Image: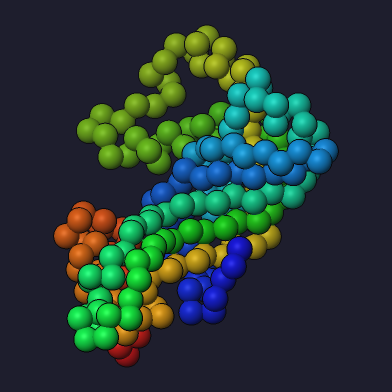
Length: 209
């Protein structure tokens, strides 16, 4: 992706935490001359430094992915339209146009299938625990009949992406003055865009140091 230096975010701890919070991503592959995208919930495994997911066996990707292959996973963390009316300088010189602020994370690596039933159960159990954690009474796999779970497992397969590179593009008005950036962050906060506005406020604090 096009990545000006001032929009670059390479700190792994920040990128990983955002992926954990916004774990739905797009898996992009190029196999046998065909470009494909699959939109999936992912789980980050810190011990292996991998992304884990699963797909239906009816998905054409299952039949194509016979060997480990290059893959790109894109996480769209947040995005927002930015009006030039929010810039402090707009009313002084009017040299401002609309734009878009956004936060995306690209993860590159090798993707392969996980067909072992025990490992697949582990992936699903971890994914479930993560997303059920906020429920007053979290659902767990053992809540469903074992024969039903087993039948579901027969129709899916796990995916593992061995991470080789992780990079974020945080376009958060770093190319504007701090006053302009603060105005944009405030406007987005008032619109309820908490993820991107909070990241902007953090960016502004770093710039002010």
